Length: 137
Image (cartoon, rainbow, N blue to C red; front, top):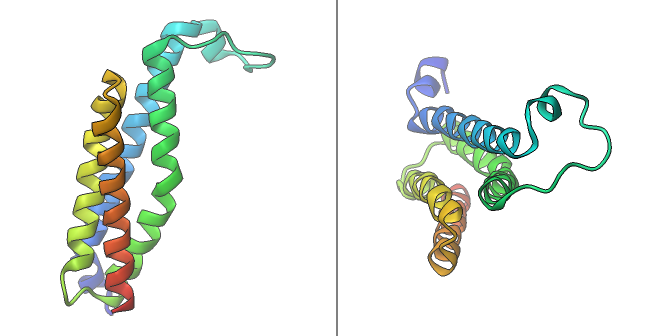
């Protein structure tokens, strides 16, 4: 595959947007944690035990960690599909599903909406499975 075709792949665009989503979640978590723990904690070496986080900052931290658990798989699968192609289109649908679910997951987790949030997480996992299946088929 030549560089121009690879650059035109929709998977490359989704990887770029997923990186923006990752940065957003890390910054959101950092801002909320700093609000709870203070500027001195954020600027310092963060040695010792940290002051417990409040409800919203704690949720943001857990949501961010949850994204980072599946993010490497998404990037790897998306780049494989960008290189190998996706003639069925199922890989791209799966990538869109993963991305959409990850977007929805943030406000659901922050709001503490339990069961719907879990279904959305399962949807993101289904998106990864679709991407995986598209590579094998």
